[in-house]
Length: 115
Image (cartoon, rainbow, N blue to C red; front, side):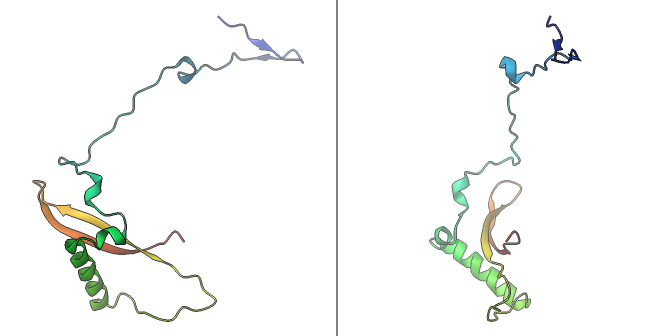
């Protein structure tokens, strides 16, 4: 048993805290699968350059742009000089049926709201 530490002005301090990590005791990290059908990460492109090499992703990007124009979501205007411009980014996802088969390739044009 440790004796309580005594400081210079004779105050008794509580004993020093010991944690599990100080004694090399670690709890194993658990990882959970969210889907019943795990996918390799390389199936969904991470950049536009990568997506443009596949016609299925090009079709998904085209249908997204057509939907944006059809719903009058945005208009192309010249940039004002006194404002910051919010950029955009393509996000690609493969949508699947309950049995794991591919339903469709989905591309979304997202605003970079964090800028």
